[in-house]
Amino acid sequence: MSPADYAGSQACQLCHAAIYDAWRKTGMGRMLRIHVPENVIGDFRANNQFSDETGAVVARMWIKRDKHYLAVRNTAGDWRTYPVDYTIGSKWQQAYATRLASGDIHVFPVQYSAIKGQWINYWKVIDPPGSPRSVVTNFNSLTSYQVNCAPCYTSQLHLTKTGSSASQDYVFREDGINCEMCHGPAQAHLAAMTSGAASYKSALPVHFSRIGAREYVAICGQCHAQSALHQRDRKAR
Figure 1 (cartoon, rainbow, N blue to C red):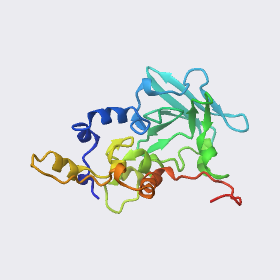
Figure 2 (cartoon, rainbow, N blue to C red; figure 1 turned 30 degrees about the horizontal axis):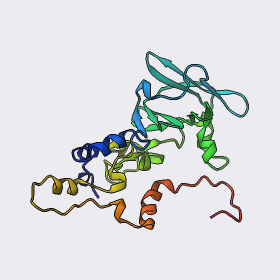
Figure 3 (tube, helix red, strand yellow; figure 1 turned 90 degrees about the vertical axis):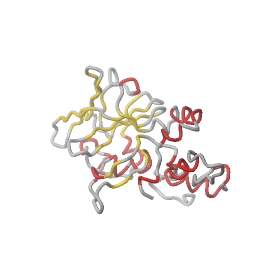
Figure 4 (tube, rainbow, N blue to C red; figure 1 turned 180 degrees about the vertical axis):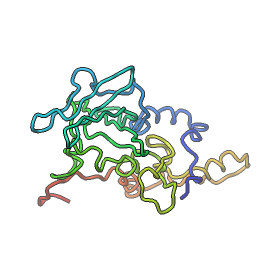
């Protein structure tokens, strides 16, 4: 499929306004968003620093003129300050990302847990022991959003330069997870439905009410079948 095969979520709104409005309020519709102060759920005022297992403060958070910032201590002990350019997530946990001068979007290793009411080292939770990116002072090593997160947390990720492996050459059509990430490319469907023809054949690839459980799970599993299993046992599958 090419980018031209996709219509974008705004096109879906034309006929499915109620569904579109409901989707905009879901976690999928609000997965990745450009920074807006009111969308930030993390505590950048009071509980606004993070310490590693030695007790050393390695990250600090604050607000200045309605803009959120996060500073990370590097391996040399120096502090580097970054603006929060994106929020990731909108409910029980929220991550933050910054766009570097190179064009790369990088996710900060510390995220805010609304359930615990504190900052956590997310990479340390999900990665195997010894993961380079789980060391906060290693930021921004292996934390590229385009490479690690965008395939599932944005929509219609594609390369702008054929054969390139540079993360800044990966772009996405929409922030968050739009309709076509689950239902498939809809440009042909849109053309058929708006053609004015007396009869038409809907070309939308996936109708969830018309597929079996295996196909249903296979579609969702592309992103949701993730594993943070660190140690195998007899019950592990």
